Image (cartoon, rainbow, N blue to C red; front, side):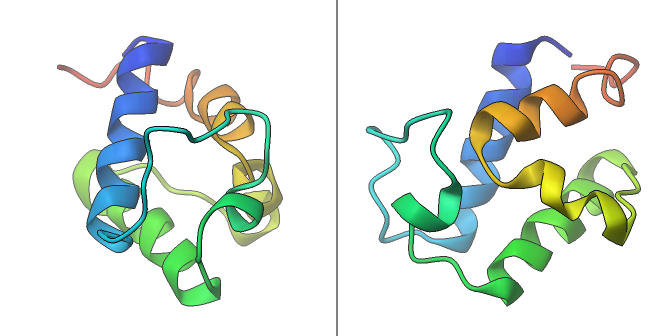
Length: 85
């Protein structure tokens, strides 16, 4: 999966979790919580959705890697290389 495809996946997941949020102006380097109305349960929904869709296991100690779009894509890129389109 390319970086752009991973970004699209994250946007799709965020759209499902926070359908009222405008994701068009999402800044990749700014933490999600500074841009969106996400709580800790929403964050866990992101992790669970990645597990459900792609069988990606994200250990709790790595949750800090998923704070922004940029850090999330950087974290997921090596883990999703083998994921088919």
